[in-house]
Image (cartoon, rainbow, N blue to C red; front, top):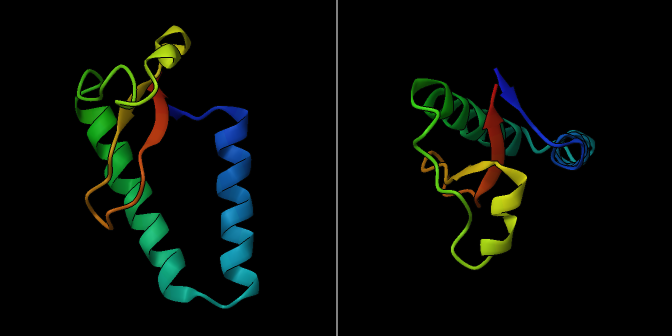
Length: 82
């Protein structure tokens, strides 16, 4: 199971609503694929992520691992394996 912060979950919901409202079907597919790849990577190896994105070392205190989905070249996402 992957735990997203409330902010990350809200942002995903808003992005999905944005895509649905604009009938961006391929964007919805790409977002879903990127999330699936990230989830599989985290569940397969919870230690696979970095402690923080390169430019933001102060986020180490949040105890999240960061990974980049290569499925669609999407930006880094935060998640914590629980």
